[in-house]
Length: 113
Image 1 (spheres, rainbow, N blue to C red):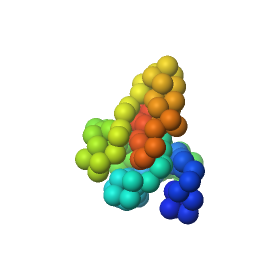
Image 2 (cartoon, rainbow, N blue to C red):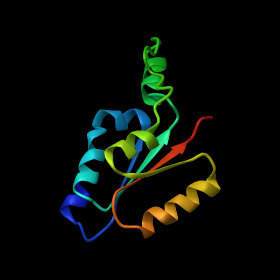
Image 3 (cartoon, rainbow, N blue to C red):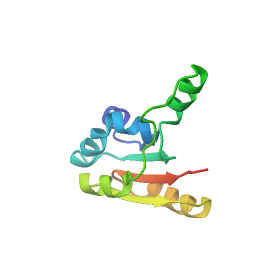
């Protein structure tokens, strides 16, 4: 929404992998409208918040793992420039690129423990 409201500034969306799946169509919209937005997806391959809530309720976290979702490939399918990083050095380099290039860009940060 921010990129539509003020196209003169780059917008950043920082989301978890599980949360992003609720609104994954935002990637398609950004590509179709060539919005200047950077998406950063923190990928730990799970709905970690749901696991935490389930543990607090002493209930099993059924279906809370998300193995095999490749956000880089998914985003490229929607038409975004997309990269993934598994180290601080790679993330820094990709972030510099995200902020220097206009248009939609996705950075998947693999943050498995």
